[in-house]
Picture 1 (cartoon, rainbow, N blue to C red):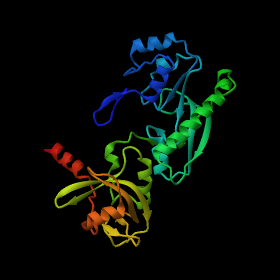
Picture 2 (cartoon, rainbow, N blue to C red):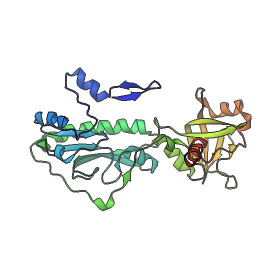
Picture 3 (cartoon, one colour):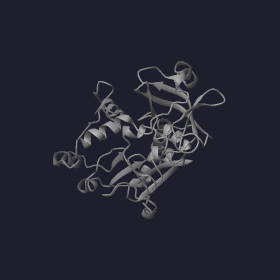
Picture 4 (cartoon, helix red, strand yellow):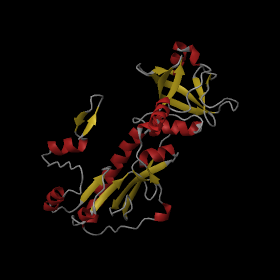
Length: 296
């Protein structure tokens, strides 16, 4: 279970809820290195263990427990995008397709031999949330169609081309801030989709001495004014506010000011006419303050 919501109340995962409804025992170890947990899992005498987006290291002793080994359903076409955030990385990189890999686990992250791969196209409108669902559906279908052959030994795993491997990291809240001087407009648009629904994307406007955080809910990259400093706000021909980036500009179709409801970009500009010609922060003021405090 993980804390969720503003109150941080503990909430069971969909997997745990489904298991309990089917009267399947649920174990939630903090670490798989615990010998008690390893003993409980060994007692199951399982044919196989299956992992999907688990996020914990499976120790060597546990990999050897099931008769058919430990399998992983990974949300990319391995060896590309190993690690914690393959779906977000594929969208952010502008890939036109990704997929799911069914692989046999070894002691390294997403390193083991591959049983099967299914590809899934990435639509221009796909967000992390929509693409994750497509990949989950594809993974379920692939697993059920291959499970019998795998159990009968008819499906043989093939080693990955490790020299082609790329790695992804855990995404934190700090990556939601838009660094206008460091990113191209197209990259910002892709990050908006890659970080939807979490951690989102936001900019900071210091208005009358007070920072205002703006969630960027719907944006579109466009050609910008090369003479404008990154972070500078101007009004596009259709009346939509746009922000200059490292290359190009980003139209703000929908934003959400801190503490307020989402609104159309034009409506925000009408309510805050001084937003035009404003220069948004190139660095998150809260991160800057934290660094200053750490140095002190």
